[in-house]
Image (cartoon, rainbow, N blue to C red):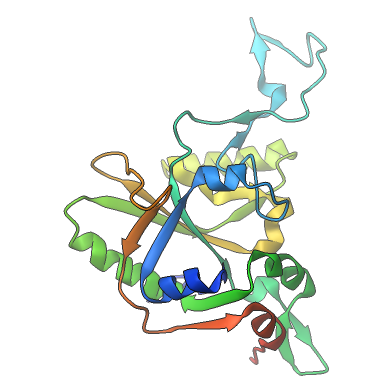
Length: 240
């Protein structure tokens, strides 16, 4: 079992979730999220790093403090040709989005999560992160073309609070983790409680092998269940 093993919930179309249950693990390119026009899911700053405008200098003088230029509304650092980094996204079902109901003497999903996540699809598949990673490891061990992965919950940061954000980035640099940027989102997305799996080539850059995305066959899940979204969101109960 994984450290920090969690229950994951992937929302979407029934046909795609049935494919996932059968072990067809599909990774979307980052550009899909950057180009998504929906307010609840699309994020043009996906994978980008906010830059503190106070740190911009010319000949040792601050553009803002010395030259008195007005600070920009936003300033982001991105990398060329990273649109096709492949990720798998899901929600975590844990204490972050559960609240206690005294009338039912149990924990239920908070209304804010239910309101937001219901927009992601009419069905949901529930499974364990441990089984997903175990199955992925088996595939990687037997794969001729080597590729690696990283997984983590998303950390939500106030992008306007450069002091707090830069502190987080510096902590990640100590671990030499270039990919940390793909596990950070603005605090406005916090209610989604996202868990993410990123896959990358070790020998060479991974090319799409299924439309725009990357597909890995990890074998059928032993423990996974599909529900209608409304049934799951309104019916989930957890008793300590």
